Image (cartoon, rainbow, N blue to C red):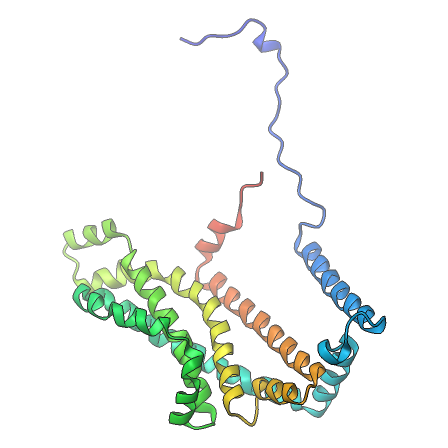
Length: 283
């Protein structure tokens, strides 16, 4: 039985209105706002230096940074150092992420082994990897291998923990269903566990690409003749802040570029995940 209020049929019906989107809430609009924010930041910085509010010796100046960066680009020095650091970071990222992810997934096969090694994993993860830099340089020398090894030490443990946790959180009901249908342990792993860990593993790429850069740069700080870390360390010892900032901004640009490459990989390999997270409720 439905109760109807007298005159309810004569009341105007109100349509649900979608919340208005800001005028700049588009890809082009956001990019424009971001560009304006960067321009305003550097303009205020340069104005502060010219008016004497900011010390150019202690902080540097945008015009000086641009001049130094342009000279190093013209001479090829900045590009060579950038390529060297980029190669170290990517190599360390790839090796560390693959090895760590494979070990983390392999721990799913034995709960006993996982519980046995878990305290050691936690202990290794708690050690600041930067403290290992002198030992790594002593073992592998001052060349490329030591920087890659340091990047691997930073990225592998993160990938291992993420993959192991994702494997533990895999759908138990689906695994039980496959076992009841006669699936072997390997089949359960490849049909249920491994696919469910892909989002977590790929999400770890975003973190590990930064750790790969940190490992490469720290290794160059300790001992190197090339790379952005060597460039920044040498310039800072000479109190050349413009060159230091040029190296730092180059690292930022490199990090942005690598992040968007990872984002492209995620969009390509996990289109269903991207589709499920694109739409957000607007309040």
